[in-house]
Amino acid sequence: MGEVRKLQKKLRQIENLEIKINLLPEERFKISRKEELRRRLAEIQPQPCGPQRAPENRQADMKRAGEDTPEGLPSQAPPASKILRPGTGGSAATAQRQLRAPHVAPVSHEGQDASEERQPAQEDKELTSLKTCWQKAKFRLRLLEGHNDIITCVLAVDNLVVSGSRDTTVKVWHVPTATEHKNLGGHAGGVTCLSAPPPVYCKKLAWLLSLSDDERFILSGSADCNVKIWALSVGQCVKSIYTFNAVTALCFVPEGDGYIVTGSDGGKVQAWSWRALDNCQSINAHQEAVTSIQAQGPLVFSGSSDGAVSVWENRCSERDPLKRLHYWNGQVTGCGGGRLVLSPRGDRVLMAYGRAWIKILHWTTGTVSRLTNHGSVTGVTDCVHQTAGLLISSCYDVGNGESALNLFCLPQCHYLASLTWPLAPRILCFAAWTTGSGDHRWVSGGRDLVVWEQLPNSGKQRGDITVKRDVRLESPLESEGDTEDDEETDEHLDDDEDDDDARGGEEEGSGAAGSWLRCLLQ
Image (cartoon, rainbow, N blue to C red; front, top):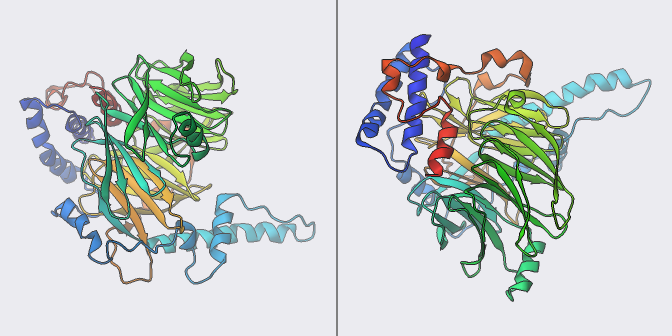
């Protein structure tokens, strides 16, 4: 197994090199050995499942998206909640509601035992129906071309997709036509994060700036230490906040008068008034870079690259609005050494941290469980997203270069299916939304910016994705105490002459995602 671990470590380090902005000649040579190392790894430890990557052109493959459907026609695909049981009307919505919340049996003394027996059977039936429907799912993919570097963040606003890139630009895309709508240039460093205030808060700022009441604004954070506020209709920066630190994460908190909360590469968390755009609070909250900030009602969650998670309460005060309720360090979460991405829901926070698992932190108690997101230790999870009763996570294998989106149903986190396509790139960021007619759409970013549009299962339109199932992801949630010995250890091996060959300037054996964050700030 020593040879296998060394090859896995080399491939992780090569992945780190590939996402650097500037490469030295010796680094390019190391990258050129990637396929050779993958072949050697496959010979020693063949991968049991997963489609082979066909030698196709990725851009040409997705440009054919308009061949089956006229460009001007909107997709008539149903949302996830509409594909549960084709042809059964309202039962689909009923099934979706049952999957969103635990089943509660009716109170009856005489029929209590029978009800308890029916509950597992009903849940199994609904889960089987979900799996069957997702195995038939079809998506049309649209490649949005325009960025010349890695896409680091994406979001959806109305009928628009907004993307931020390490090329320092923010771009706005019109989804129905898959065309660039606005190019927002103004940052001097890579764009690291985006956020969109709700319409009611946009209206307040528009009034102060004498703009239309229906103006929409977006926020962008950058390694140039600035947070910029952009007006989408005119494509201009209307306000800029200098934070004195490279901005690595931000979110808008829609409580009270509204707040912008930012995180820095040095671990600082800051709050900014939406009304006056002045600094309300600065806290040295984390030991390392803040990589994710998410809001859930009056609560704010921040995560850092050392694996620590802080939970804050917004007290809606003019000064020091954030009060820390809980702090769990990397020893508790088990997520140290990577780019930590958070997705809170209720009393749980789902965490992606550049490994083959998704960690789930019960933030009130500090208990941790994990969900298998890849069948191999060479798997990488870069992003995780919850929407419409679904948990959607990215999955990338550094051993063979295969990439996919994994789907799980909530709240039980049962595995449903994996979606991929030939030559799919590593997915570093993700957003999901529904159109006004209820159609389900996603956008993923990384090397490519791709819009996913769900197609009717019964239509003649050809989908661009392959739906597969990985039986290795069928395992239920596991408590952290039972699995910590299974954590990947290849980066802790002693370096030898072969390991120096692929080190690529990485001073510590951190995960691929952690290196991605450092490269982003160069």
